[in-house]
Image 1 (spheres, one colour):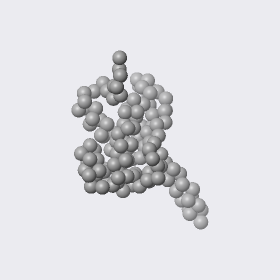
Image 2 (cartoon, helix red, strand yellow):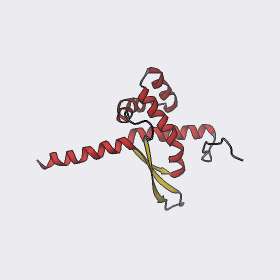
Image 3 (cartoon, one colour):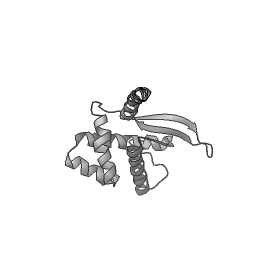
Image 4 (cartoon, one colour):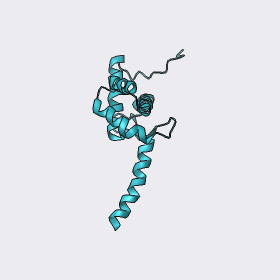
Length: 135
């Protein structure tokens, strides 16, 4: 029985899985939305949300914890300056997974994972930019 076995192994060793998750979370922070397999999206969601929680804390220890996991200082800077303040009023549920269907080559289920508040901010800015361009 699989009691208390929550980690999705993704058919990788522990070190490879940790690097994969860290790199995917870095890409999510940098780009705001990434396209990956559904299993990987579900595996990185808790880690990405923990990183936002560290960003919302904002103290030096939280920044050092984020750098220790993500290993890229410029990504941690973007997390603390852009992503975390956008989610300041939200108490969890910072990411959204949207299923896309199956990949053509191997029929793996694909999905987008994105920041919930980043998409709302971009949608609010788009009509404002369109009105300015009309003038």
